[in-house]
Length: 478
Image 1 (cartoon, rainbow, N blue to C red):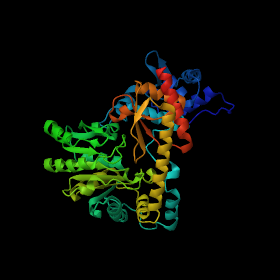
Image 2: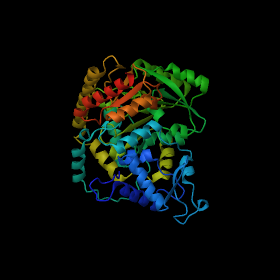
Image 3: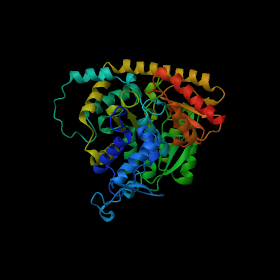
Image 4: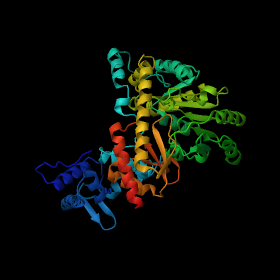
């Protein structure tokens, strides 16, 4: 992100004025469009507000922008040879459409990380660079020339990758399937998007866990779906709640993350799994099982997926490379009945004509290589090490102020704050102190919960980050 150069001979306000003029000339801010506020630009450029005021004054003197009390600052329509009637109302377009923007808290987190990369990051749901199999993937790529035809691939995804997944899913997840029942996606979110857009209709009722990662995805509301909650306790959801929702609202689909659930880290108990399968088979209800975290089980014995117990073909199973290897490869998969795979492959082909072939080939080779088991073992050890550091820091800094159940796998740590502190105030104060996290209300919970994701955080930053978090809490309750 651009920032003024402190050592430049040109005054900082002049650099900012030149930068904004350039962005306006490129069409980023068309004639008549509203510019960001002085306060927001000051934060973005890491300068005093008075400096931005001077930059705006410079642009106003040139006729490039114009300000009106109560209406903000806009790009001039006359300076650029345009009139309002010839200028598209881009603000209206940006606010329109059926696809909703991310939640405000998530946009604030993204903005804060972009403005200050030095923030200790307990928000980003991905592995740190040292946990990814970077060297192994580099070795695989160096051994393979990838000189085959680089045209559009099968709409379902690379045959090599799907064949590798058949073996992987059987050996590691006890799921028996064939390559024709697997669809390759760019990750779990694309799988969920395809399901909500292609298999459901506006007005349909669906059940999701509470709290749930699904609440942080406006794609469900964008699809016009009605969401109903399945409360999660320390052993997962209560299967009988599904029957209740079916009778009352005629839910058409259930979305679950039964293993190391995001955000709570809970695992659905075996007794509830069996009851769940009985109920969905009785009602003829499909279940979407999102299973990104199972192989991170710290004891090396991952809980089996619901799909491994599914004898009726009731479960659409979603997996991903992102939480066990490398999110940048953008590789996910779905196991589903052949008719569903064909339907979703057709829809995905309309979107992008399929994924890049090289990441698929790399992922397939990695799954079949001797690197996989050592990598998973190292990943589990390092994640448990980080979790333990987090627990030690929380006990040291916040004993008596938080409640939690330590997860046995996954990347997330779910906490309940005992003091009553509004989410927005705590997030902003934490950002000021140099740490960032995701408020629990993002996932449908009441205010007072937080999700601390520790997979990306450096071990040496965990204690410092929690100390800063504790200072933010204490400052708000004193």
